[in-house]
Image 1 (cartoon, helix red, strand yellow):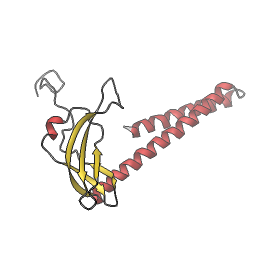
Image 2 (tube, helix red, strand yellow):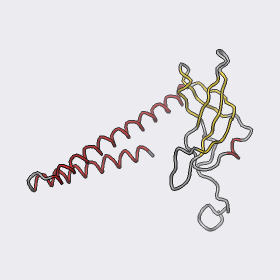
Image 3 (cartoon, one colour):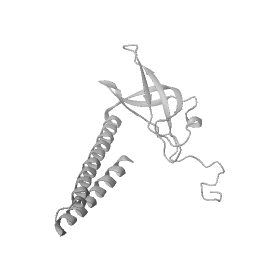
Image 4 (cartoon, helix red, strand yellow):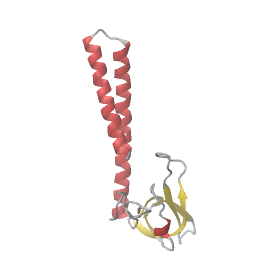
Length: 163
């Protein structure tokens, strides 16, 4: 999702920058051209930073999937994430906990945003988390057992007719 936002900002910024440069070149420098160039440059830079952050997060998740140590964690809760709202809806997150035997310290892990209630799929189940062996605060929660989309309550698959 954030990669799409980054691309949108970068392309929007480039278009605004081009429009500003065109205004600047066709007529003497005016506040319109300066404003378009300034906002276009700012949007391009913001878009590139968003894309960089998304790429780094994806690279970290890939590294943990390849080299991370698998630990089996205990389900603590399925929580509604009130910090995020899209179209008036809040996503869910799976919260689990693991005790490191060597130190006796507890670590709490949260999944990414899940746009349906995963409670029926996680009840009585241990959740697998891949951790960085040197730093358990760097982790990736495996939620691949969840369906890609929530089942429709009426069984129609959202099309108005049975599957």
